[in-house]
Amino acid sequence: MELKKLFSGVFILSVLFSSAQNKIVVNTDLGKEKISRHIYGHFSEHLGRCIYGGFWVGEDSEISNSQGIRNDVVDALREMGIPNLRWPGGCFADEYHWMDGIGPRDQRPTMINTHWGGVTEDNSFGTHEFMELCNQLDAEPVICGNLGSGTVQEMSQWVEYLNSDNISPMTDLRKANGREEPWGVKYWGVGNENWGCGGSMTAEYYANEMRRYSTYTKNYSDNRLYKIACGPSDSDYHWMETLMKNGNPGRSFQGISLHYYTITHNWSKKGSATQFTEDEYFQTMSKTLFMDELLRNHINIMDRYDPQNRVGLIVDEWGIWHDVEPGTNPGFLYQQNTLRDAMVAAVNLDLFNKYCHRVKMANIAQTVNVLQAMILTQEAELVKTPTFYVFKMYKAHHDATMLPTDLVSENYELDGKSIPAISTSASKSDDGKIHLTISNLNPNKAVNISCELRGLSKVAFEKGEIITAEKVNAYNDFGKAEEVTAKSFSDVTVNGNSLTVNLPSKSIVLLELN
Image 1 (cartoon, one colour):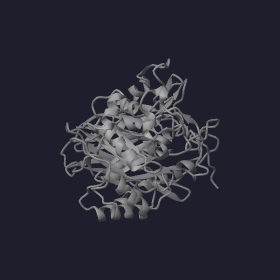
Image 2 (cartoon, one colour; image 1 turned 120 degrees about the vertical axis):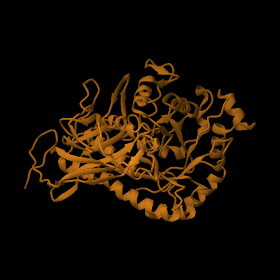
Image 3 (cartoon, one colour; image 1 turned 180 degrees about the vertical axis):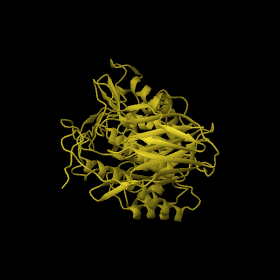
Image 4 (cartoon, helix red, strand yellow; image 1 turned 90 degrees about the vertical axis):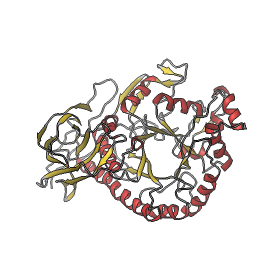
């Protein structure tokens, strides 16, 4: 029996690999669909230190801030390219009552966050603060309304408060709280996980409730709401079919959500973020690739009931979920973030690009200090995670035209199981440049890849970037130099309309071609 090892290097492990030729054909003349920048969206919940201590420190904090919002976090996310931000949850959304978070902060009531750690919230971060955060980030707000414990009137008035320029009580209240002009928020979630923490509803019951809530969330002026119905978890195809059949798609909702988390083991024992065997790494990547099947099957259902493609698939919670870091509050979901997490992000983003004709938005969980975060903070310090660098790298695909690819990949094999070693996606930006992202999931072996740009007679390699590290469990942490970052990459040979790329093990590469 072969020995298995922790990637920190205790034992030696031998693995067999196939010898298939690796080839990517980029069909440069077949691009039709745009990769919405909103696929690269983010999620911020009142959970642990995501909002308080992550985004919000208050105006009196010694940490550099603008109107109470951390300057370093805003600067980093703008550098990364954050197109949208979902708030206030998550499970928190269906117990959040928005009127408790407006008006003078010292007069706002407190509440207990029953879902996440049982902590007392002072509601100092509310609607106005969130909208100011989105303004500083230059990101589109995505607001999830309370269908679980709220009322139709409450959600209707929240939309009116944010969007109305009419003479009305909600307009007057907004102005009294310091905002003269309406914000015009487009994206609204009609509840969250209403099959679970958002009310434990059946699909049939939720479909009726969603239609009722949607009826009373109105358009104001020229702003047209994009309402996102609560969709299924994982492979709950009955929920998807019920909503597409009974939910009045295209009228009551323009988007439907899908939630899927990569969990190495199971919900009771998820596994360590930083200490894992190769078996666990393989299992993580295998479960990540299950997203392909989920997207394909849910889209097939959507196609049956919505052949006009009026409704977008919104993957508004995804990412890898580990056990919390030792010694931290289990309700705060604080986890480290290694090169493995970066590989998970790259594979998912490639899949969202692949299905961009239906996938119109996605929101990784979560932006700061929670789950697969882009940023970790500790007092005044800030760390950019490996996942941050993947999102920054993939910014090249924002609003570009997706170029279909044909991939032949060798397998990464372990103990008689195998997955494709290579993940890829390609796009063409408005300036005519082609961007190709390629990941080598194999943690032990470099791969040589032949790339043909079909439809072109010749191609020029402009520049490249790579994300990798010595170990697949390498991570960035406070008080030390970064172990995982993006660096220049040039191991590319060009011949006419083809190129050969040598990808190191456990690496993610971006190529810019002209």
